[in-house]
Length: 75
Image (cartoon, rainbow, N blue to C red; front, side, top):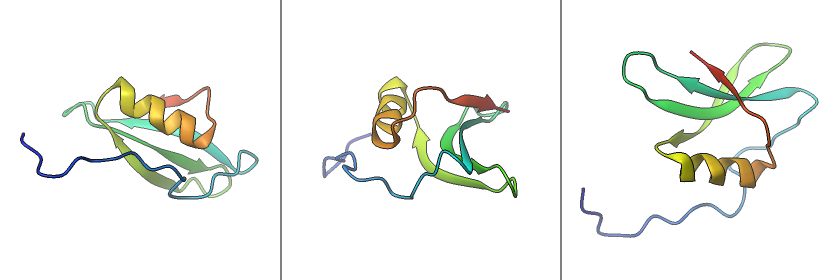
């Protein structure tokens, strides 16, 4: 699709990330294949979505922004 304006990646994180209380998760849809990166609260189980992952480059940007090295896939 043609874009009129170039999308630039965020330089600062959109939401705070606390490794003591949150776990990085990559939610994957079985039907559509859509992937969303975010964090699951370890106490409440609530998922906070941060960004849509369309390709490997988006996943690398997410990992760099939040300093995440290991991410769990959830279906």
